[in-house]
Image (cartoon, rainbow, N blue to C red; front, side, top):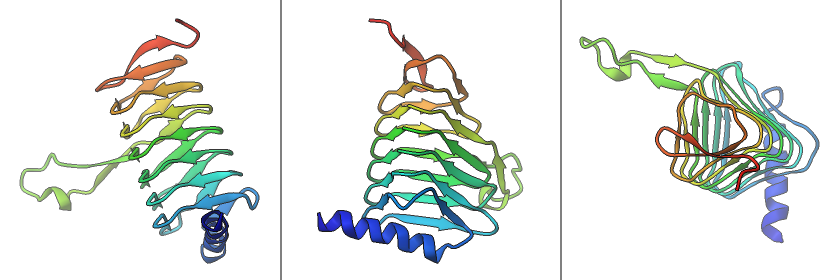
Length: 180
């Protein structure tokens, strides 16, 4: 109980520290032990009502922003790094160790070190009522529609539009919503 109260206060204290960069809808939310919310440059992070961020998560935004809908749950060690834009709908669940990024290192110039070549950016969109299971990686430019489950250890590359369960590397539809 004490941890929940402390997490609630830490969540709202971060709102005050990041005034004009971190926006929340309502006061209900939780930020777990060791979790970080980092907003740089002119970027912004919008957190919906009842957002639960478990222990050791990192939400980073340095570009156009990170938008998270209402009633989303992020299990431990989730990493969301937005250098351009990432949008997440309402009522989404994220298992432990999920990684969501909207950028890749450029690496085409053989005369330059990879770390000096900059980045390529592509917006990431995740619909509402999604369950992203443990250890999933969501790559730049991915679009996940509403009511989609991505099975554990999958890599999302591209568009997942049909409601159902996706699995594998890259994630492919294995079961449509409502099928048995």
